[in-house]
Image (cartoon, rainbow, N blue to C red; front, side):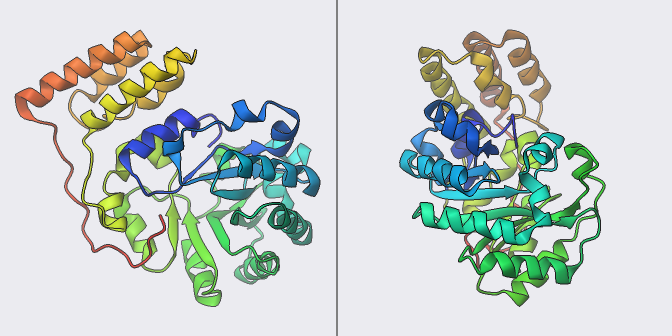
Length: 327
């Protein structure tokens, strides 16, 4: 999610879940090749496993950008075929590339030849509301011939005449198509995305698929992922919100020494206490103060709450850990 899943937000999520695979914002290949790649692609080692999500339409620059990502230590290269923005269309990347699956196959081959990392695809079901399951299956089959075996499917069509926001709401969700793809292509790693709000919903998809991607739901409430490690990966420990906030305080202090503006980190902490008592006070203090001191004030407020009555824990979601360890 451009403007949201930056390195500071990813570091926050890593304090909540140790095993979930994280993805960068969509990064245009030319920005990497002709810009300050080290600044653009910098990440904290704790963020791994971490995938670099690239956008582009030129095999040469995509390959160059992927090699930079490999050199910097990313674990996966992901090609974005889902962005419907006007800017993406004018530049010829993102969802509009689905018009020409054979062109996409050329890009995927270039990526596979450029790096030793796994290459994956993030895509929509089709274009302009004219998608069919048979058309989707044929497209995936074309891509799979390149040797790329991992597909993250936002289970909607893309309407290129609409804004990215409208494209998240108007085209209907068809997760059943992704489940059917898994039955038809059992050797591929298939991950569903779109409209999944809770861990309970994710676990239901994981009965049929290899993974689930959650985006905006997690940004709105990062603690939705707090039960992933015990329920999906079998890890026993679940951190409290206060523990996560204290770790982020230490992280902010380190970032300030590097010259990072405090709000670059603090804005991602606004929803850390979403849905629990005094969550509004937490957001108000951070929003108004926008400083390390404001975070300290908010931490004192929450520490006092814990001492008085303890931080409330959400009940564990129902259901057994699914057989697939990818989330």
